Length: 293
Image (cartoon, rainbow, N blue to C red; front, side, top):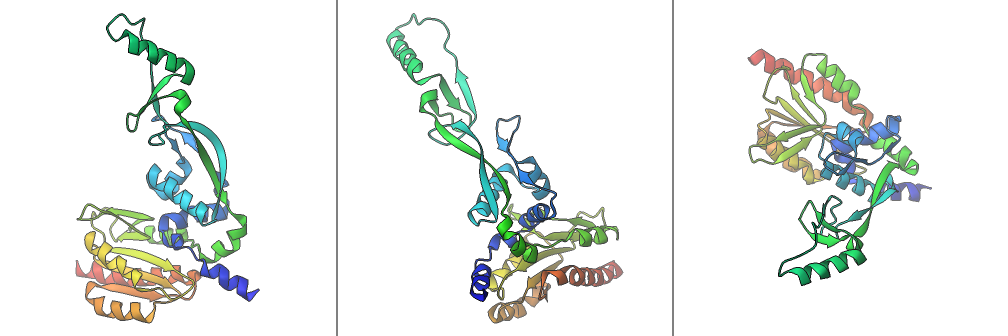
C-alpha cells in the first residue's frame, strides 16, 4: 500500500502548479463543473466557453491544457463528435467553392476534368486557416472531445488543489485589486502568468505584489527562481513565493543570493496553510507600502 502511495506521489504533475489549472480543477472538485463540452462559435471554431471563463485564457491554450490534463489522466477525454478536417493543416473551417455555368473558354478541358473529380470526391473546399484547397472526399475525420474529472484522481487532487477564493474575497474586501489567476504583459512583450497579482489601491495601474505558489511531493528545486525573472519583467514591487513542502537546499542557497530582488519566500507543509500565511504577509507589506506614500 505504501509503495502504491509513493508511486502515485512520484507522478505528481507539474500542471498542478499553474494557477489557471488549479482554478479549473477546483471547479470540477466542487461540482461547479460536471464536464466540459465543445461548442461551435460564430467563427466556426470549437471552443470550451466554461473553461475560458474560469481560466481566462485563449481557445488554443485551453485546448492544449485540456489535452495535457487528459494525457496525465487527471481528466477523462471522451469523444463528443467527429467532423471533417483539412488534410493539410487539420482546420475544420471551410469555404465551399461553387462553380458557375458551363465552361466556354480555352480552359474547358481542365474544367471538365475538375467537374468529374468533384463528382467523385465531393465539393471542392478551401480551409480558412491556410487556404488549402481539396475535395470533400479528401478530407480527414477529426474527433472533437469533451472532458470530465477522472474520479480515480479525486482524492489525490483534493490534497493538492487549493481553494484561494476566500483569500481573494478577503483581500478585495480591503479595497485592493486582486487578479486571480493573473496574466500580465511584461516589458518584453511576453505574457506572464502568476497565481495572484495584488494592487493595494483598486484604481491603481501598478502592481504592488505578484505571488506564485508551487506545490510538490518533494522539495522544490531551483526552477522556482522563474518568479524573479517574471516579476522583474512586469515591474512588480514585491515578489512572493509560497512553496509546499519546502525549497531544496540548492534552491534556498540561490534565493539567499537573490534577496536583493525583494523575493519573499514562505514554506508551508500543506496547502491548507497557504491562505493564512499569504494573508498575513500581504497585510504586513501593505502597511509598510501605504505608510511610505
